[in-house]
Amino acid sequence: MAPSLPLIAATAPMWMVSAAHKSSGKTTLSIGLAAAMARRGLRVQTFKKGPDYIDPMWLARASGRDCINLDPYLSAEADIRDAVLARMAGADVGFVEGNKGLYDGLSLDGSNSNAALAKLLDLPVVLVIDARGMTRGIAPLLLGYQAFDRDMRFAGVILNQLGGSRHESKLRAVIEHYTDLTVLGAVQHDPAIALDERHLGLMPDAEVHDAHARIGALAQAVDTQVDLSRLIERCAPRQAPADTPRLRFPDAAAAAPAAPAADPVRIAVARDAAFGFYYADDLSALQAAGAELCFFDTLLDAALPAGVDGLFIGGGFPEMFIGPLSANQGMRASVRQAIDAGLPTYAECGGLMYLSRRIHFGGKQAEMVGVIPGEVRMQARPVGRGYVHVEATEHHPWLGAQVAAGAPVQWRGHEFHHSRLDGLPDGTRFAWRVSRGHGIDGSHDGVLVRQCLASYTHLRHAAGTCWPEHFVAQVRRWRDAHRLTASFLTPAVHSLGDRSHADAQ
Image (cartoon, rainbow, N blue to C red; front, side):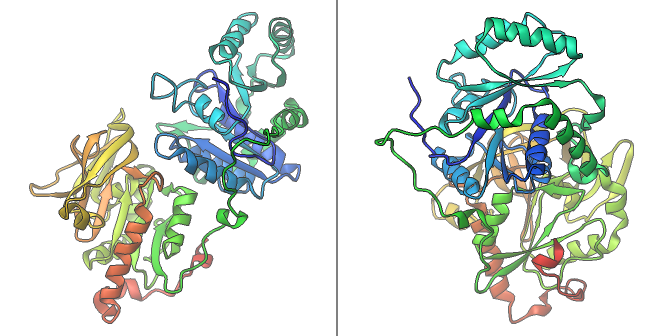
């Protein structure tokens, strides 16, 4: 079936970067593309297919603009298209970095594959090929990718990991002879531009001391070995027939942070080298729901920001920082005292680990906040990995009233953790029942301690999973109930100087 044209009415060149298989180098090339084009003065908007947190960190740093995740499993098609339109409103060029291979996905029919997303957004595909050890054999590979789905549009190919100029010449000759694909670039193998990896993929940019220099090296490599002008030219938006249905074009302001609410609640958000797994549009959704975000550093700050009404600790790699996290006793005490006092708190994965009694990793152990009566032990292999389906229990601090009234709440999310939580006492209350995924024990997730919900599940503000609104509502209820008794919070929380959202960035 021929694709409808163009569903998103794009006004700037846009494409998808994909590959034949994972680990083809598409992320490093995408970072280089973003940085090289930004260096030329273009406003580059990047997107990442799937739930990944780390690649978007690098893409955001390379482009100078937030990278937005597009996830067909967690989001409705209309939401994906609206998100792209809103973010592309102020951009000169844009691209989506795929995950895994072009035709890979959860479903047999490919409905959530990179190819399906490219067709949904009417994007041509730039196919990255790891060409190590290949010469004539590249022809049947490329012909197969074209023949598998005749509706796919290919802007061209970028050859990666080449062995030298002779290798490049052979590959170009083969591709020109056997296919009609355009070679947009040929990048030589160079260990100097490789990015370090660990168990969840790339190392976050905040942990790489020379991240700026590495991005610069990638930009230089791409600028000299990829024909950027030709790439942009081949990805110019197509014109739709006059009778093609068009979506509503969101105002450009939709991509900007929401204006502060008249009476905002103040939510402290941990953002540092240990905790950095946040979706940019989820943070915007918290603001739109009426939250002022007060960022703080668990490694360096002495305590929580003053006068906060809620606390959000996202995912990250706390196991890599158990020494500094444990040594910052002032922050650990501040967090523990605030939660003990009933401060509404939401923690995801790494945040859960930080709130436990201690973390065991690499033959060492270190004391953590101690709110959750269990201990985290890192494992060699993933304990939970992939998408999850959860259903709220009657204990859920945001959704329990709905459940008690007979309205079940079922949400989707994802998990990727190499740790397990041991030693929870009998009678532990959970916020979620898990029907797909692992969570904490294979059946439950979301440990509840007072007004704190700590879960291995990462939620995404999409397709009815409106967690920011529900969390902000919980924070507001608590704030309003205790507004006249501010002393309910401990002096450790209130003794700090005020720290605004702007000051904390």
